[in-house]
Figure (cartoon, helix red, strand yellow):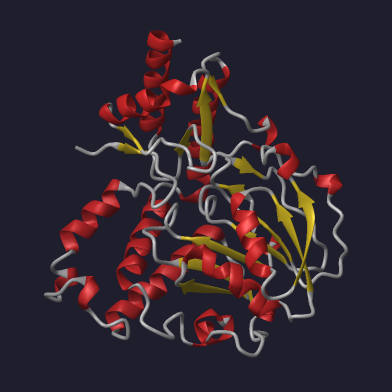
Length: 359
């Protein structure tokens, strides 16, 4: 029996995608082999890779002067790749610190260049984002980096920072493809696949062409954007099965009406869950209302000693992976594209019944 999987990543995948992958697993397109067994250099797989890129470009309206790369190492590898490709050891770069993933990106960048943290939300408990007019960017950095959605804390920017002529870099792992996005506002976007794109193993990088070819000496070749672009993201053997599944997910997104339709659906899912939390005295979301994430909804119970009971009973009801990240505790429901509204409604119904019995 399929459950409603609220995991933050690897996350739930669309059922039609899983069914198609199952049906094609042993004999892909009549070739007598699995897609996992064919060469990444074959015409058949190159066609898969090209279709995936074309679909991503279509769904996000990626401008022609941007490269789309399918890389390995997850978003974490990009914490190193970004400074190695866009900055020198003497460069100053500017980071916004809004939570766990920002902090990790900052720590890694400090190994390669001079990092200035121009906004730090630690004092808020990472429950807010810096006000738009509070940012004090110098205009002279090699790039500005921020995390639009902090998966662990459930904090999401309600604006795109204005960086002027300085390249703006964003870790969009948790929000890519969840709603329309003006790619031209960014110089570089990267996103781990395991939330809205496909299974773990891929990282999508969308980078303006004028920013590639700048990698510093000593940059590992698999992190060099120019080297990867020159080889069509196949400098070495890519995770072919993950790439194939990503293509199926992108097809599914288009069939749903694209990111516009999914954006409206995601808005409704988030509103449904936040409304249930706000109307209750038993549940609480700690994030400032103007920057609550659509994708990751943390919440706590009025009586923390009931946490384990809540999780056990939710799991028995087919509502799984609701435990909050170990660093913050509580609960967290991730509402990525493949989570249907029915799953959110089932969670809300369970929460209300649990409150009735234990509140």
